[in-house]
Every structure is written in structure tokens, then in C-alpha cells.
Amino acid sequence: MSTATKPNHIGRKISRIRELKDMKQEALAQALGTNQQAVSIMENSETIEEEKLIEVAKALGVSVEAIKNFSEEGVFNYFNTFNESHGNFGNFGNGSTCNFNPLDKVIELYERLVQAEKDKVEYLEKMLKDK
Image (cartoon, rainbow, N blue to C red; front, side):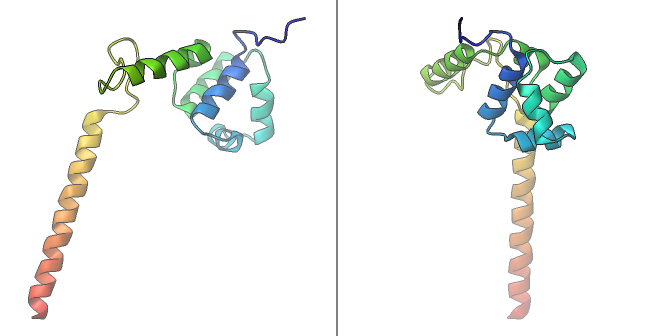
């Protein structure tokens, strides 16, 4: 009898993705509107209904395909490629995707910078009035 993990055990894949995202079962349960015990049962299930899988994928911030195709070897290969890319930030042209919109980050940073400048001007005007 083999103790090897079945390669398509969806519950274990969900568990590993959750762990890699440093998320506790309680946090996933809250995102799904359920309790920790239900998440534990789900993670021990070999199969999961498609509708539930869609909810879990959304809560984990990954695609359903990412869960279905998840493999430990793939994760290690990705990070090895990432580390070997010497500053190219991974192989985003080879099927990997950025999980945020860089333009949104630029806008967010710009808005924070503008707000800091406004705060500085307000502070300096207050100091001039006090003199």
C-alpha cells in the first residue's frame, strides 16, 4: 500500500495554496462565510463541487485552474526560475501573471505623495501664521 499523495487531491491542493499564502483555516473560513471545521473537512476531501471550488479560488486570490493544476514541483520550479532570473522579476511572459495592476500601484503611490505634499504645505502655512 502506497502512502504517496494522490496527484489530484483537490483538498490537499487547497490546503497547500492556503499555507503558501500564509493564511490560516480560520481566515479562509471567514472569507467563505463558514467555520474552521468546514474548511478542515473540505481540505481532507479528494473532490469538491465546482461551485465551491470557484468560491475557494476567489477567497484565495487564485484561479480555479491554479488550484486544479497546483503541484509542489511547479512551485519550486517557479521560485527557482524567479531566483535565477537575476532581477527580471520571474518569467511573467511564460504563463505566470502579476497578481496586481502595476498602474494601480503607481496611482496609489502618486496619491500618497500628493497628500504628503499637501500636509507639508498646510504645516508650513500654520507655522508662518504662528510667527
